[in-house]
Each structure stands twice: as C-alpha cells, then as structure tokens.
Amino acid sequence: QVDIPRNETLDLSIKVLAGLLVFEGFLSPMISAGLDVLLASLLAVRFVLWKPNLALRRLDIGVMYWGYLFIFAQLLLDSIGQTSSPAWVGNLPIHVFTFGAMGLVFPAMLVRISKGHTGRKPVFDAFDRAVPWIMMLALGFRVVAPQIHSGGYPYWIALAAACWFAAFALLGWRYIPFLMQPRVDGREH
Image 1 (tube, helix red, strand yellow):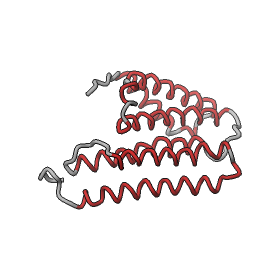
Image 2 (cartoon, helix red, strand yellow):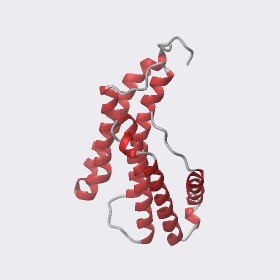
Image 3 (tube, rainbow, N blue to C red):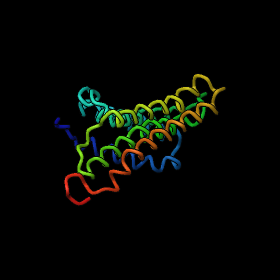
C-alpha cells in the first residue's frame, strides 16, 4: 500500500538506453560498455526511488526487487566483459540475468498471477515462499559456485538444473489444479 514515485524523464531515458543496447553488437565495445554503465546507473536511481527498504521486508514483493538488482548487476558485468578479459567461468553476465532476474521473477509472477486469476489472494504461503528460495539456491549453484570452485562445474550445473526442476515441479503441482478448476469466487477466468 505504498505509492511508488514515477519520473517520466527517468523512465523514458531507461527505455531509450535499453532500446539502443538491442543494437550493441553493432557498437564499439567501449560505447556499448558506456551505455551499460549509464543504464545501470539510471536503474540504480530508480531503484532507490522505489522504496526498497519497504519492499525487501516481504519475500513476495522483495523477490521482484532482487530480480531488478540482478538486471543492474548483469549490465555492470557486461560492461566489464566488453572492456577487459575477465577470468570468470562461463558467460557470467548472461547467467546473472537468466538465473538472477528471470529465475527469481518468473516463478514469483506465476504464483501471483495464478492466484489472482483463480480468485485467490496473491499472498505467498509456505510452499510459495519455498520456490524463490529454491531458485536462489539454483543461482548460487550456477553463478557463484563455479567462480569459487570451477573444477566442480558439471556438478554445479546439475545441482542448478535440479533446483529449477524442483521449483517448477512444485509450482506445477500447486497451481495446475487451481487453473483447471473454476475460480473460487465464482467469476470467469
């Protein structure tokens, strides 16, 4: 129940920079890296305006903010990769985005949308809260662990995949029955 301030100039600047980065393959690495850093900086400003101290108190809302922060991190890592030859294992910026942003946000959105569209309150219960934690574990296995112990790379990949499977299996087990039944409030889907 918090009013999130919007700044049209900031929002438009973020959209324009993100649109330019679609064509980063045609730009010089230095220009692309500069755009990455500029976009990350604007995202950081907007993040602060969005009252993270309130959102991060609740997992169901805070997970969206964590996903947003991983977009910020991906942009910074991408800029580093464009201007130097980092010694990280794998394509770290891509995995930070896929596991950090998508891996945290998508399951949380599935919970909220599935509950809302079936007439239930979009409030996370214990099973729903387990899913983001499982996905955070997958993030640790896929992104962090290989940087610390690269020799275990195949095992880290297998553990990350097992976490993704477990998280989405839990979501399917919980929400497919809800989605196959009429709404609990009697309204149409």
